[in-house]
Image (cartoon, rainbow, N blue to C red; front, side, top):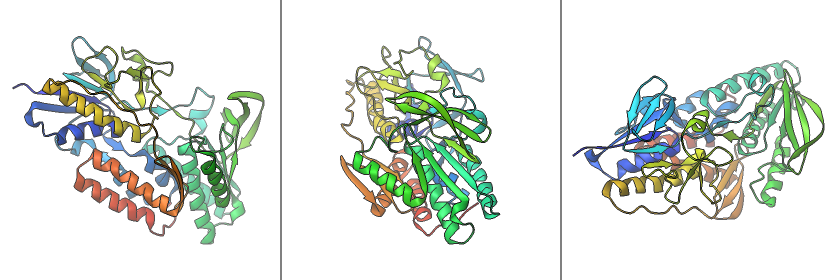
Length: 414
């Protein structure tokens, strides 16, 4: 009996979860799974801000990464997708190799968006890959060293969403630890967070947004809202006021010694080149079964897709992993020649954001939650992704080590 060739484009947590769900369905020799990705490691990006801030040892990166080569039952090919031939049913890679498929899954994720703003790529850092985190970590080590020598330093974080807010809070925890240990005095490091909205974490209800602002102030972080980035120069950022989402007025200059941008995400360039129907943001449109419109054997999930005619799921690992359940189920239905099932989007998404070591805010089943116990809950929530993306024994090992790394009294790791 010929194997059904399932090719998954993208080795992030969405694509990897589809593969693991298929493996656990015990389809045996009837299916061959191949993951195509330009990176060999699947990275759980919500842990990167801890690594970048320098509050955990660099070896903690290994717990946030899954080596795709080592995943049992899955073939991995390191390549960048160039295009898809829907008629011949093969994927064209940048090395000239074509990979045939019977069923295809597009899980190409997203990349950092600089919105074409002058100077962003040259003078700022984003936090999307492990290499970004290690580069920021080095810069912060230099910043702390100069502060210890008595030089006043400033970190500017632009973007009041999840990435920017969690990162600046973690850095503030590192700075406060350095102050308590007598490494620096508090007035040597200024921390600023800039966002388009009046308060950070605008996706949360007002109560939690206010608690976020108070928490940041307690950590020594100044938040400036209703500002957008206009341009970046060497050592300074030009910020412009925002009213009703529209930049107005003249720009003001903010100096920095280190600048990190968390402006949002966009689909990778390769998605734009693929021969599928897309929405106004360039995301591939999928139907109620998560099949790409007009494609009977090509599915899509995660950041690079949007539900046709419906409000799209958030561009998070949580949403991609949730969608993987339906993609795996419908791939199995195609193989077994059964009817496909319709995807059921969640009405609300539980969200938890860490604000330093011992505090977090978020919503659980629509209810606002905050405090130290919520920070512990965040680690439990993190655990589910590893249980879905790798073997149970490996997931337990990673989560236990990650929990103790985070929960213990941390020291400055520069």
